[in-house]
Image (cartoon, rainbow, N blue to C red; front, top):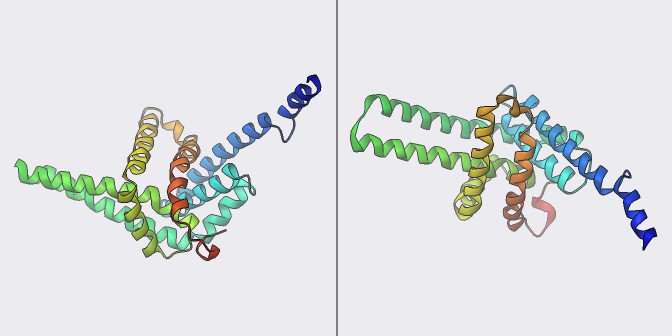
Length: 216
């Protein structure tokens, strides 16, 4: 009994032990979040950064496969074109919704104006939900940008509870960042790790039985 306990204690602090492993994973989570911030600075690359962050988070942190930074940049390069297309489309649509809301708030009054403001606001929320699904799906499936958008539209409605949970996570962390802007450098990793707990359950349901449609 003592020898077993002693062995566990030694293993706890060894290179492959649980304590070191937890610390290593925590470092990878924070490091991946920092890489996301760094690679998102040009703005146009946010889509590729989101895809790379989710891909490397699931593969390296959750599945213990590969090196986090190496997989991040590999996924960033591999998905750059479709991720950028998706990001531009969703960002432009969201900007259009917010512009319409601003115009209506300044130039209209009454229930008709309020109705359209609510419609545009709901569309903006739905676009945010699509963002939550689109880039994780792109990191997992070998599909065109158009099919990824269609899939994210479907998932946003089909898995409504998960969508609401994802919005709640983003909202809570958004409040923290609003209060303490410096957290922007530390929270992208934890946000992605937490969201992946829910997103993986959805993505696994849509994985094809053959490996042809899944990205390694």
